[in-house]
Amino acid sequence: MIPNPESRIPPKTYHIWTIGCQMNEADSRHLASQFEALGFVETPRAIDADIAVLNTCVVRQQPEDKAVRKLTDLGGVKNKRPGMIIALMGCMVGKREAEELAERFPFVDVFTAPSQTDVLVETILQHDAYKHLSKAQVELADYRLPAVNREKAVTAFVPVTLGCSHVCSYCVIPHRRGPDRSRLPDEVLDEVRALAAQGIKEVNLLGQIVDRYGFDLEEGINLAWLLKEVAKVDGILRIRFLTSHPAYMDEELIQTVAETDKVCPYIEIPFQAGSDRILESMRRGYTQQEYRDIISNIRKHMPDASITTDVIVGYPTETEEDFMETMKLAEELRIDMFHIAKYSPRPRTLSAKMKDDVTPDEKEDRRIRLDELITKINAEKSAELLGETVEVLVEEFQEKKNRWRGRTPHNKLVFFESDADCLGQLVNVKINWTGPFSLIGSVA
Image (cartoon, rainbow, N blue to C red):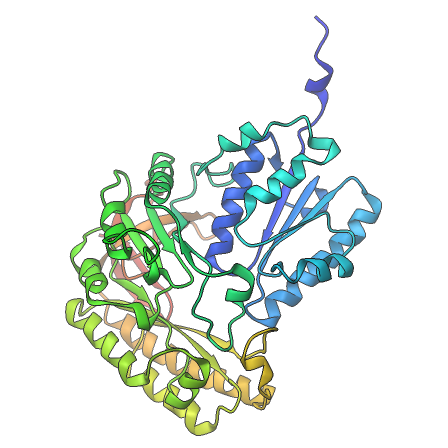
């Protein structure tokens, strides 16, 4: 029997490099599943791939610089392998930026805006090397986990709103991802059911302002309603959502989180600055007292709720007095986790027109001082769990350290040892050691 010559041809390979937010991670997962439906196989190194995709972030200058370095390196690879396809997607590629990027990086074959994985795949299928592939194959990939995640992934991100219309003064997202819009409920729920069928135990519903889910849909459909519907999906053990905005965190949503068993008592709600003057300049839409009231209301319904926030230090015109208002708010509210960013001007934003008058040394000094305060608060709050038993959803086995890693409903990171196969299981763990950002225990 003469073997089919095509059977000796190695499969085409793809590589996706991702940086930035959870929305990018969700986009990359979906794109990987589309590639694999076409018969592509993932390769761990971009330089070995037939198709290399860079999924980028420009929220701050640092991730954009990383993407540019990575892209420049791939340009050198393509000089030696001209058949290689390079695609650039994510927030580097806004509507007005694609033409400029094409001039700057002429070796890039495809430019795709955030979340537009279908457009990227369709463009690739028009390439001579891939015209024989069918678009119908891609449709089979909806909500499928790529091979690298199968039998290992326990949690997954599910976008529910896309884009943002709030236009904070410092934020480039509205210019790159467009105005906010909600995904249809059936589409979101179909994705959650498909993920549950593949073994996913926890879903994290995503939006730049996730609280706004349903604002453009029929009356009665909002994030609170969606959380209740997702909780009905068999196989899903936990539900989280992010990122919230203080202006849209209402009573119904807080009560739903408190009363729905599968929804974790964990809320990510940025305050960005403790100074009302800076908040007004940022166009955030609330005062520090209004933020305090929201946190107080959350804790009234859920006294043990875990709260995470984002803070920007060194925003234009921020004085030492302004920064101390941020420190005061952080110490008073004792929030569980802070994501601290040093301000960097972003193109086309309102704050980019302002003088960036806080020196790099001042920004770093403020970041360090706030980080030290948060580390102290976290250490004190973690110490309260010493000797307690917590429920852990196990996400990974760390072979080098011979231990399991998972998280509590409050998103506390926990490590423990066990000879049993705990992946994807809810395990009760007694805490024997506490640190600022993680806990160690033993099976209870």
